[in-house]
Length: 118
Image (cartoon, rainbow, N blue to C red; front, side, top):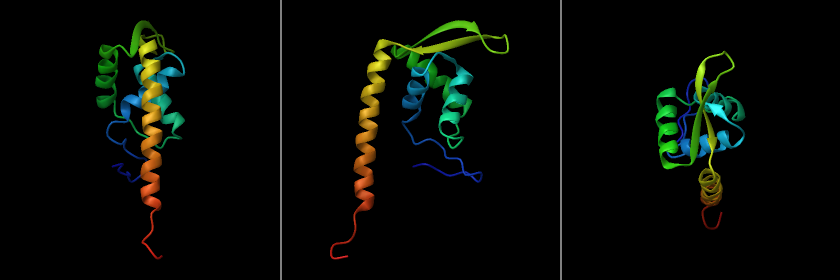
């Protein structure tokens, strides 16, 4: 379950980090820290991703063949690994998005349930 922090930001639900990384990288090549910033930006600063979770996830996704990396230069002229979606990643992003939306709809329906006769 999501846990709200004192500053109002939410921790990620378990199992959503890969999906968020795939989405962020689908918007254009990003270096690791850029992925983290893109997700935070898109979420309106509501989601916080720890670097200790991000980098193992990037490694795992690259190992699975859904993202690919290439060395390049970051905006501050440092050597950085830039990630982009592979065709397999695009396919997985579509499937995972569909699964997420379906699950969110089901959970939403359950939460809207009211006692019989009410």
